[in-house]
Length: 334
Ligand code: NAD
Ligand code: TYD
Image 1 (cartoon, rainbow, N blue to C red):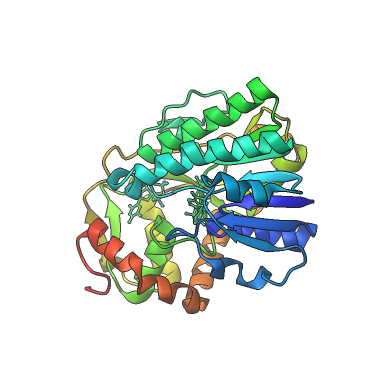
Image 2: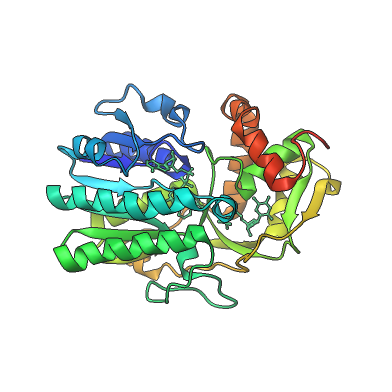
């Protein structure tokens, strides 16, 4: 199969591309804008694979998309701004990429008559006190990130309804694993714990997330691409939920750091309390998560511990300025 993977230089996209090339022998063109979160290094081991190509462009660039999509059997779109805190501080790019960028990709997919998979998130449903969201739950996004992702989902669905595009939507829960940019909870806590830096916990730390190991989500997306019904949405949630503070404590144990590093900081505005996804529909297609949280977290901590060459350039670049703005203190200040 020949795939156009947009946003394939990011965390989940690069894991997906690796799986498609290694396990399925696909030819993959990655189109990526290389924002702060996208890095060609994430694909370094795949550069010489048969049929691999990289295009440095944004999904909002219709000319570049038209060239890249030629000959593809399907498009999988990961391209997005993905950090809730950044969407609260500076929403502009979220609107350009999620709304206009998704529109450009949909137009190209329609013109070429190819299958289209939109990678989306459980955050479009908003927060849930008890129980789990299904695919027919109402969309009640609460941050500029989730609102623009929800907007993109609605546009994707409209292209199936109106034009008959073979479009599908895959909504994942919180991912963790190798190659995740350390602005997100798990890699941030792992790297800070390894360095003896404070571990910032928002509010009371009692928020709950449904964690999925990135390779499980990548396989879920591949499964939906191969077996999903056009026009349908599939939730792809992880096997375990965890309270943020427990996640931080488990990482402290795995790293061998001190609990004294925990630092309660001002809560995120509009912070969603709990996410929970029901994934029966994708299970009925034959997908199952394989990695439980305990095992995945251990693997993730080991990967960050062993891959300093991957994160050292991040911790000394743009990230330092971001960190200072977000947490009001410099990295390494103790
Ligand atoms: P990421 O931030 O690591 O990667 C995003 C990638 O998109 C980067 O390579 C970036 O350069 C690229 N990009 C951004 N804007 C672009 C544009 N305009 N054109 C082309 N490329 C662009 O994000 P991620 O965690 O890998 O998330 C990938 C997708 O999965 C997103 O759509 C996100 O909403 C969704 N998702 C993420 C999670 C999670 O927990 N990380 C959970 C569910 C769904
Ligand atoms: P995050 O990884 O940003 O994912 P999302 O907001 O998409 O769920 O955050 C996961 C949870 O961890 C969320 O409840 C916010 C919280 N959090 C902290 O407590 N401290 C931090 O430094 C970060 C980045 C997140």
